[in-house]
Length: 413
Ligand code: HAM
View 1 (cartoon, rainbow, N blue to C red):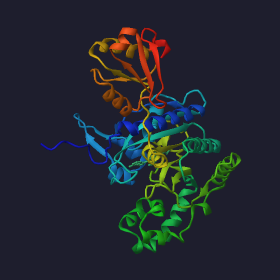
View 2 (cartoon, rainbow, N blue to C red; view 1 turned 90 degrees about the vertical axis):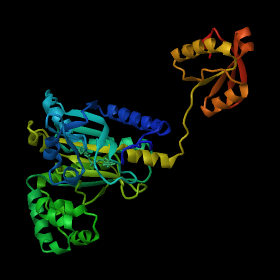
View 3 (tube, protein in one colour; view 1 turned 135 degrees about the vertical axis):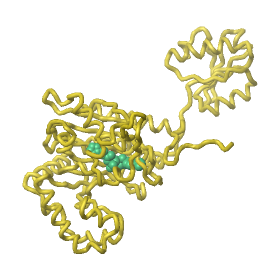
View 4 (cartoon, rainbow, N blue to C red; view 1 turned 90 degrees about the horizontal axis):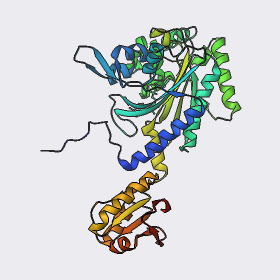
């Protein structure tokens, strides 16, 4: 019988790589804490309706990429393709906005999209998702971008660029949308199949279509900045000024529209030139209408999500991974040493030390080989001599220096 393998696009994170994941997740938690965010662990499944109403029923995510199924009672449920919708749902459901202050939440975990797997693109992937609810002002936009930039730059990711745009508000966006439709309608035949459909349903997405002919068509198309209302202009100006004030480098991109429909005003991405086609490490923006749309109060919000797999790719390209081993490897050299070794291991672990051992006796050479393989810092030799004298031989595996330590005083190890 052939052995079973993991589902395509679903990846095992093996122990060596998991160490790097732990570092990234610890950095994420540490940075969001500095910015005063609290964790909300949302479920990985939600009603399908939630994603249709938030991400938008004509987006690629909802049209083609969701893992949707009927549960045993006939309800349509979906594995979350992103975290924002679930967080908004939870925010409304638990009245988290009460108290007047902005509510700052983050969520770390797996997301699911049925995309074509390639480097940096999986079907199960992980995001750090960060959201601020309840502040309509531009300083929260800037704060979110600064948080994201702090996280990524403290991880020392190479070749990053921050790209910003403003997608306007319900006042100015329809005017821009119409002018774009007018412009592209006369060029309809030159658009790709998808974009002809988008022209009616979701024309802004044509701006970031990858097809060459669509890109040619949009080159001369009207740009959003010509249509921003005065309030959107002011808002975006302050965001940029805040970022300049803290020396955060960014560029503007008129064609940045994002793949989800809920955005208003500020939208942004952080890209790395070292990632190839899937260059977006993180993306986000403001979504002032979504709470109301999902049945809550009219609460403005802004947030981002960073893709952890892409961060891991960048980090592992930067430095070859050296797994760190235990503090001690217990080299058990005689069967009668098994009991004392077992007791010593627990005493050392109780002190917080990391201890490895194989629970069988072996020759000195073979045990030292295993200690090296485990990448242990030190080996503790336990044979008949050590048992007789009550003194273990401790060997530093880097310097090869040896000392003798009393077995009944684990505090000295
Ligand atoms: P998104 O741009 O769809 O935004 O995803 C954010 C990040 O998740 C991407 O920049 C990328 O790093 C990572 N990502 C997305 N799809 C995949 C995939 N198939 N494989 C690996 N990584 C992937 C959102 O999800 C929004 N919810 C962000 C947001 C939060 N906006 C406001 N608040």
